[in-house]
Amino acid sequence: MPPAPELEDEGDAIDPAALADLRGLEGDDDPDFLRDILLSYLDNAPKLLLAIHAALARSDASAAGGAAHTLKSSSAGVAALRLSAVAKEIERACRAGEPVEAALATRLDVEAARAAARLVELLPESKKEPR
Amino acid sequence: MKVMIVDDTELALNLLGRIVASLGHEVILRSESLGTLSEVRRLRPDVVLLDLQMPGLRGDALGELIARPQADGYAPVVAFMSGAEPEAIEGALKRAAARAALTKGSPGEMRRQLEQLLTRIAAERATG
Image (cartoon, rainbow over all chains, first blue to last red):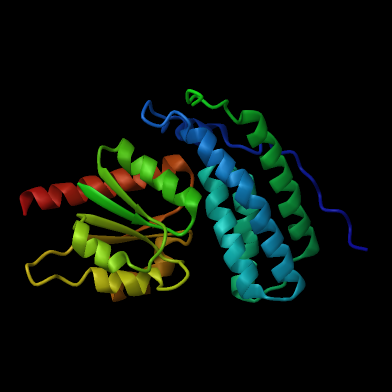
C-alpha cells in the first residue's frame, strides 16, 4: 500500500487576494454575481472530479486531462488556487503521457474538499428581493 | 467597444463577461462555437474572445473564419483564451491570425490581461 500523501496545511484553500479581486467584480446591476459564480462552481466541480477519476480508472488520459484542464481554470476563477495547481499537475501528466500517481489523485480530492468547504462558508446570502 | 465572449464553460463565461463589463465594454456572451460565425456577422463585435478548447468547432478553427475580412472590410480582432501559456498556443495564434492569447487564471490576472488587451485594441481602432 503506498504511503498516505502528505497533507500539508499551506494556508487557506481560497487565496485571499484572488477572492478580493472576485468580490471587486460585484456591482449593483448584478448583486448576486459572487453567489451565482460560487454556486455554479460548487455544482460543477464535483462532476469534474468524478470525470477525472473515472477517466483515470479506464486509462483515458485525454479525457482525464480535459477534465483536469477545466477544473484548473474554473478553480482559479473562484480563487481556489491550490486546487487549481493540483489540477494543473494532473493535466500536465496526462498530456505528457505520464502516469498520475495515486498520491496526486488523492491530493486532488483533499484540496477539492477543502476548497468546497471554504467556499460554502464564504457563500453570501442572496441580495435579490424575493419575488 | 462591443466584445463577444465564446466559452462553453458557464463559470468562465460569466466571470469573463463580468470582467469585461467592469472595464466599460458592451458584452455579448455565447456558450457554444456553433452558430458563432453568423452571430459575429450579424452583431459585428469589435473584439471576439474565443476559448480554444471547446467541443464542436475548435476555437482556433473558428477564429480563422472569424478573422477573415468581410466584403465591406469588417473584421473583428480575435483573441484566444486558454488555460495553457500563450507560448503553448503559438501555432493556433498564427493559423487564426489571432492577435493575442489570454491565460485563464485568477480573476485579478484575467482582469489585468483583458484591460491591457482591450485598451490597446481601442487605441488602435481610434487611430485607424
